[in-house]
Length: 133
Image (cartoon, rainbow, N blue to C red; front, side):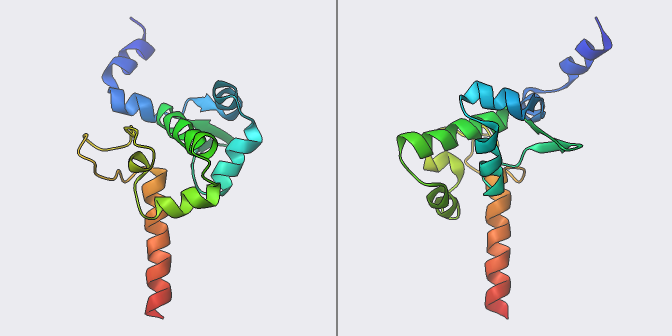
């Protein structure tokens, strides 16, 4: 067995799903959208792909979240601004009634690596600092 094969055996399923392997062009093609749309989601803080040099790389979990976003936008007709507001009140897996792969241990806890969690925590800190002044 090759060294790469041995390494992949050691890596668990969760780690595999978090590995940023897919370029923006591949993800856009898989999702039936454009690179520009994915950049727009990033600009609005809805997704945060990994960066290597200037290139964006997405993980399987990022792709699952993007599918959830697309469903909210296109099927449920919720605007990007509406999704951003909803994410301040509920985690991503409750918004879409889908099982978010970022849910830790199936217990419904927020995952500290989730872009949704991180952006929500940042918004809370901003609000708290404004109120304390």
